[in-house]
Amino acid sequence: MSSERTEVQVRPGVEGDLDALTDIYNHYVRETPITFDTATFTSEERRPWLLSHPEDGPHRLMVAVAADSQRILGYATSSAFRPKPAYETSVEVTIYLAPDAGARGVGTLLYKALFETLAGEDLHRAYAGIAQPNEASARLHERFGFRHVGTYREVGRKFGRYWDVAWYEKEL
Image (cartoon, rainbow, N blue to C red; front, top):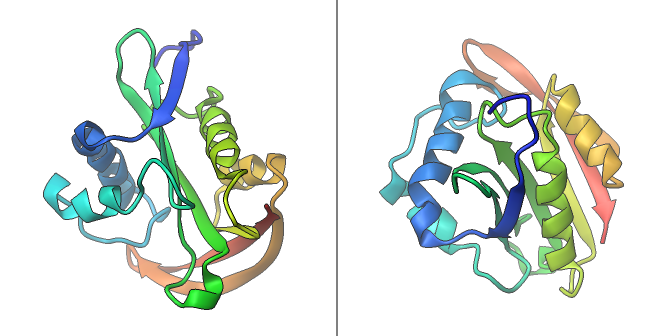
């Protein structure tokens, strides 16, 4: 993506986005500790994940698309925080951008759209786990009212070392 601003549209994710979303996620699997997955996925392996984010309800998938090219620049999700029923009013949120789409406001647009769609849902809290270090993600979450509530030290091992995860919380 060039340094020029590109008009970005944000919409719910659809099945036709699966290949591009898988490619974005696999970049983070291969190249970064941002996700603790250690093996890449095929689109078919990611299909259940996509289908677990319908266009309504508390578990959403929002996709940012370049208006001119229709290229997917990133996505944000809200997912179940934990599988037990008492957690149903909590969600875990996450955001992934195409490697060349950072520092362009795409993440802000995605989270703005995601939280607008969640406003009418029966939700109490959103949580985000951020593998450390990741100052850009921490700043984004803080801009949206998240506050740091704790850090799991050396909770994940990837690339031959241990990584911390800082946990953030936002009232919905």
